[in-house]
Image (spheres, rainbow, N blue to C red):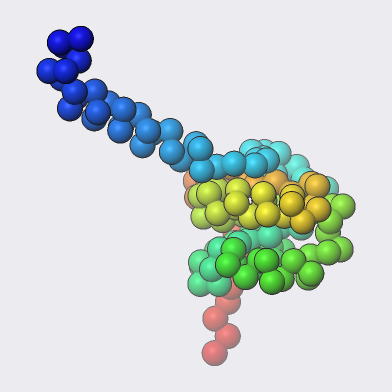
Length: 138
């Protein structure tokens, strides 16, 4: 007991750093798909790719045929997605954190096949998979 009391600050630091390591995993909730699973679903041609990043992030590069609805506007625009309720919906963001929250929201709204792309656009680009950039039409 004396050892613990003398080294309480070290124990506190260890607990704090352990919590910091676990936090990203805890924030990623909901159904996820790997890059391989996502490409297989996309290649079947019946999935909606929903990009929940902000429009400027989307313009910098996104998956082909992705629909951009930012996370903050998603609740108001769920009606636009009604026809995809029974189809696979792959939700994409920069790293997978925002898309996990959006996936949970979609599942509550009845989108039974909504999944989040694990690792998001960062993982997609790290693997050298194709992206589309919005062309500047001035």
